[in-house]
Length: 111
View 1: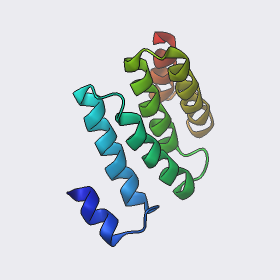
View 2: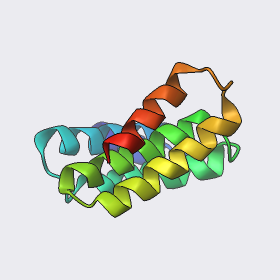
View 3: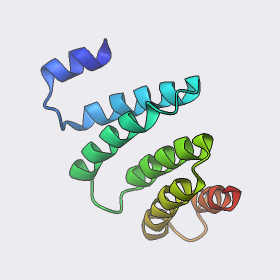
View 4: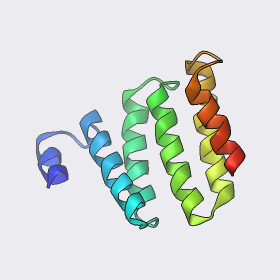
């Protein structure tokens, strides 16, 4: 319902839609429907790429979300690809002792 309303009032690439798509992806992910989750996470990411600077931490979060779905699907090479993209952004955007970097290293190590 929220997506329908938002899509009728905003352009397809409006940043508010990115949040909606991300939330839908998270619901599919939490339900274990890993085939549908990446579609919505990627829609969200495409909008964020247009709306944010290339080293914005929110893009890192988006890459991490996509990687997590591939992790649950058992596609570890794809997982690592997205976790590393996320990590590169975090390295540029955050100080070297930031806790998010520790989490990122942990995610990569878990793969």
